[in-house]
Image (cartoon, rainbow, N blue to C red):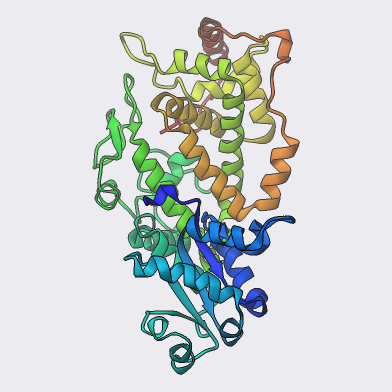
Length: 413
């Protein structure tokens, strides 16, 4: 069977006495790492046939994590589960991941010589966090890039003092994605990402291995969806490491929480209001013969001041109530491009993963308290992109009357 044919990634076989110390916390950590886990407390329901449910769970799990302890050796149900896993193991599948829980080689040898011959994890001395990390590596080796994990550690430890490597003005720590990008270049290059991913980062557009062409008036980079999925899988693996999350949480909360909520809010707004996202794509993605104006994305930040009841004005007005309007304009531009190249939903998974990992309560409260449904705005339900073009013409007149207008250069990448 292929990996996608299994319902669960791992089946946890254990004795009841080892539930609190090993099985339950291990199950929770594996699920936080994005794995599908068959664990009796979360899988079984009242009225289910125990033997049938266990047999089905064994057959539909890619791997079996077996918590071997003196209690396990004394139980019948764990032995039944182990027999099912050993049958698959004897059929040529390496499916058993043994954990020795307070037992020694002689104990395991007396119980099962084949099990004693397997390379095993041990608790103690390994912590539950270390066990979970190693199981994730075994089950999903392709999504656990050691290189990217090392990069994440370096970023968490050094981004606060890393120099700004871009040509634009440095707005750190208040800047948006572009400011962050020009700091991340200290830790990883495009060439490294492409080498470790094993394919192209972009399918088309002006970007190259030596940098991003963020001022091109006629085209933009179309991300490779497979690359973005690879990035998501790796981040999910990295964020499945409790120690990394613990050490980097303060940095995320102080520097990235607000921008994470902004990108989530702007994506959700555009997703729930396709007439707005379609209008933006028509107006901002399809350039004229001479190309798009140099500041066409930044000028979005001022649409909140043009009170004509249009959908774009309402979008920017709502975002500006919670976030800086320049950063909001960059977020809207980013999602407009990602909706055009088909990667918006994957990038959105990354944003949600970060928020749920680092700011679970804040994200839940924000998500439930923010209403992005605009079916009733100004009594209108349809927005023509030509309205947006007229709005932008009016906006240019407003900008000409302003003195000292210099919004942050935070166009979407």
